[in-house]
Amino acid sequence: MRFILIVNSWIPLTTLNHFTDNPEYWDQEDKDLYPGLHYTHSWTHTRGEQIPECLKHIEDLYQQLLKAKYPDQRLQLIARIHWWGCHACPCERGSAAIMEAICQGLLEGSNLPFKLNPEKPADIYALTEPDENQFVKDYVSLLQSTELD
Image (cartoon, rainbow, N blue to C red; front, side, top):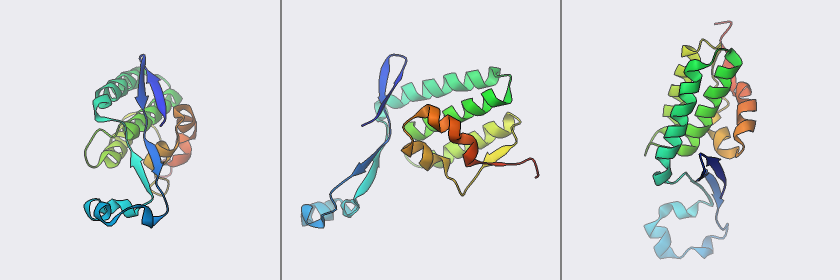
């Protein structure tokens, strides 16, 4: 499991799990009770009890965004908000779509000439990139320019 440190707390990040490829491993009763067991991979998101800490951190990033003077600072903060929101997965359903809507609004509200690129899903990249700084560095490659719109 991957962890990240915020304010002296280690927060578990989303983890990609790999189960056995051998279908014989699961007995029939398990397959009947848990139909998803026929899949060999799954996500484990940040634990529910840690979501408030993640949301507090996202709020702190948002407050920094409101004070940021330069476009590159604003873009980096939006990327961090996106990364943290994807890992926190704070909603029972739709967290990825909600984070996309929030971040698209932040891009527009920050007067940045970008929109999220549906062909490069930032949420999937965030979940598979354990390094927040690397995600921030790569974030612009996940966006489309709106300067010609």
